[in-house]
Image (tube, rainbow, N blue to C red; front, top):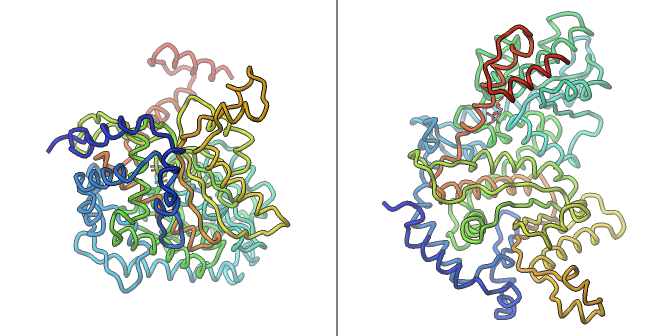
Length: 537
Ligand code: F6P
């Protein structure tokens, strides 16, 4: 089988890109008055308008042919079957089972995993109800009023993103904090105004061996015991979420206070597993289930819709087009909703830890670009910061604008202003403003180049009616599947993360070297000098 760039569709796309080189979005829209409606798709409460990408009908046809030639359908079926599609770790990637209904079956190694998932959800719901109702008491008999999630990466970014996104639906008489960084400042600032006797720590770690999380969990235990003074308090103030019961017990958390999940749930795909315990504590079990239903609706669509009308497939293929054929290097995630302020950070891990790879599944170096960089900020704040570069810079980015028709916090005209800005930015990027238009406004000739906008800059617009648990779940599932589609086209393992290991190993070596000033230093001269400097301080 030829490599990806040798596939007929890949070659045809390269030729097609050259043929489109002088085509502007202005021309594409002028030639097809229906383009805005034609290049749009709806699924699971979301509307994707992808008409402002630099594509025509032929581009789409060729991208869909590329998907076929990369066996996308077979790879989706393999995921659904629970095959070990995470080849380097020999694991399934079956996060779709986390939101399956009790009537469905998903098997790993011949065992249906759905009953265990629903049993865990029921235990989580029971625990959350008891904490929220005040029935679960702290060691001194007071109800819990603060929840501190301790975790990092997928054990933090999903929970904190979901909490912030669904804050509208959360218990307002409770505090929810998230501690991830090994920098002691993170923990100290998170707990400084909390009452230990009313604080519950949720220690989240798939492996329960992660340095940062264990350091923070130990700090939490010391903080709690310095106030409550009795080891027996741990059982009332600590719960764990992990796949590793032995390490949880070693830390001193009663396995009865542990909520489990399996190794076929990747960390960055785990916010809808037991890792979502703090989310459920905040929004309650019914809202959590509604979020799972949203995930599931997008899963069903992804699995069953024809590729030409399949939202995650089209979204993923457009990223391939922009990355591999138009040379775009980054994707700006621009939610026009303040509640989604952590969504860009969440997507950074989802996309870049999944697809930031340089070798294909069989270990050969890839000869094409893989994941672009993901970054972003909520609109309209970003407009007054980095949008200058998006409109007139020399670096090319694509933008995903995300918005909601209605606001959860209507305030005079403000939602209309917000939405007008979203729509205007996508329009400005696509169509720009020609030098002639600028001159016609009477601008002095020497300023014309400064005030012209080339346009022809691609973007997607994603709209839903309102930010609800279900629309959030569907949005996350959309990106999960889009990332998978891109990984299939790039022929990479989207579910491992070996690239994070080297830094961890070197840090473990350097910790004692910082501690012991007499330890010989055998690194390069720069690393040695830095360590010596830090020792002095
Ligand atoms: O270092 C990267 C990573 O392994 C992520 O993939 C993961 O989400 C994070 O660390 C946290 O891992 P754990 O949940 O095992 O503590």
